[in-house]
Amino acid sequence: MEAAALSPEQKALQLNLDDQKYGTLAEIGAGQEVAGWFFRAGRAAGTVAKSMSAYDMKISDAIYGRSGRYVCRERLLAMLQREYDLLLERLSPTRGDTTCFFAFADTVATCGATRERGEAWLGIRFQHMPGAEPSDILLHAHLLDSVRLHEQEALGILGVNLIYGAYFVRNDPRALVALLLDDLSPRRVEVDLIRFSGPAFPAVDNRLVSLQLVEQGLTDAVMFTAAGEVVQPSEVLYRKPVLVERGRFRPLTHLTLDILERAREQFVEDPALAGEEPVVLMEMTLADLGGERGPIVHADYLSRVDTLRTVGKTVLVSKFARYFRLVEYLARYTQNKIGIALGIPTVRQIDDEKFYEDLPGGALEASGRLFRRNVRLYVYPALDPTTGAIVTAENLELPEESRPLHAFLLQRRSFAAIRRYNPAFLRISADDVLARLRKGDPSWEASVPTGVAEAIKREGLFGWVGPRTVA
Image (cartoon, rainbow, N blue to C red; front, top):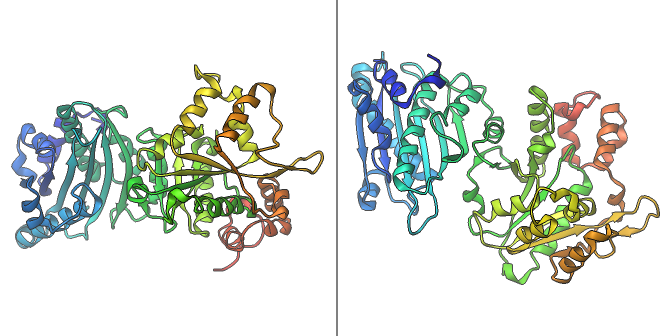
């Protein structure tokens, strides 16, 4: 049978009947939900060397070391390392030549008085062939059921799918991602981080796998650092002020970067920040990847990520079409101030009634959802293409139906005009830069940061037709 046609019990049984795969299951927080499937399926002695749980924090600390948080990546890694090392120490001398050892672990908090929804870190450390160095798959999930028992059931299924996928679908990470929600749905489980490492995944790019989480509907957004490391959003955003700029970044220009830097200068002047350094994000939406299909989407995505890395920014990739959805997402992780850096064309879109025809309250509802939190938009000016005059958030001409709402938002200081801007950058158009780049016109280089130009020429990004440079 195809993997997608197998029930969790059938997957557990297939693993139990495979004498080559043998390991430990260690679970903290939500019961022996994953191990339970292997015992119910029968022949568990063929796969389960040990099953354990440690609920008391002192007991858990005694086994895995002290931790400030118990549902976190660090605790998961400590569990995997200890259980995998013990397994090899005790069993490798007698069956290491014929066995693929594994350690599965999860650390979980279900919904309750202190949290609206459950959260889990899950992972497996395994050998893809006997005697091989171990490989890891780590993932973070939100459990979305409102009943604790249902959360526990979902966790058990997710864990079985992960173990099964590691052994039987590992050569196709895209299929493995889809497999995670077998017998589940995005309404029950959100997976917002997955990370592959080790010799079983020599060609896996975790940035592409992250994109697939969004593409396949397992999460609304994913995040990774300038170093290319996939991170869970709360690891970066928890209780922090956040400044974000949305864009296509095809390519990143002096104008785009100046919008962000000048917005940051004013954002940190806000007394409410009390000198706290904000998290700065550059966000792309899947809508900007557009209707492109297949490898073109992935190549375009990686080109943009690679150029953003040259300026050292954390990147968020989302499926949000509207700004209020982005703000609602960020507010899941921080109640601190949120700033948005943007230009005049985006302000026009935010004010446009036609953009919200499917909302019962139209632009008024969208504005209420965008600004009900601690949010301010930092607006970079533009040049009027006809007169050459400077257009700001204060003198922007809008359709008559949009003017009252815009005036109200100006009055309540929801918009802040960026004061210190570079007039020379106002003439830069990313579309024009891209067109010149693809024609081989060297003048495009003057419009982008030096590191970005070097990366484009070195890697042949965005259809660059000139000679490749050497790093």
